[in-house]
Image 1: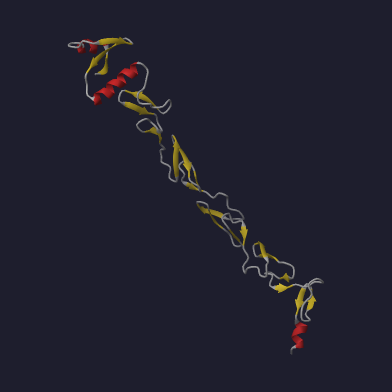
Image 2: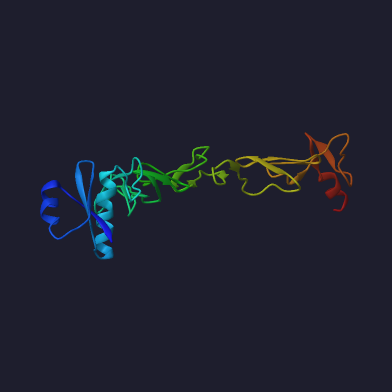
Length: 207
């Protein structure tokens, strides 16, 4: 046996041949046997009359009807539990009504604008999601790592575009030449000229 709600006029006609009924909020409720599909709808009628919602549509996502939840804009699903985004998120996930959570490297209302995070430095240009095009002399994800071509030799460190920092005892654009000082004299009779070893004397000795 399942409950079904009728209006007053409908109830007067439906009561013919029925033996049980009672009043609920100025409406009559008649007890009648029905199939399970019909029973779900009838149950909804009764609960709607008493202010209850059998569908759990959420307090802000939708509202209850006899046939189920009617979802507000931005929500979908049987219980209005799924957020929707129109237009859809291209490179991200819909986290709320028309609210996209963008994947790394993307921004914009629909995640359709690529970006670089961290941003490109030293004149680099963002050409794709987290992809920088670096100018000459720079490399790295954000174009913040200097490059030296040719590379620094003898333990030298590249500290700027084509700029080597040489360890003690070496000099030159790429630290390729031995340096000389009081602490680092030239070997084999070489002469120290302006901080650089000149091997001219040593070469003459072998001629």
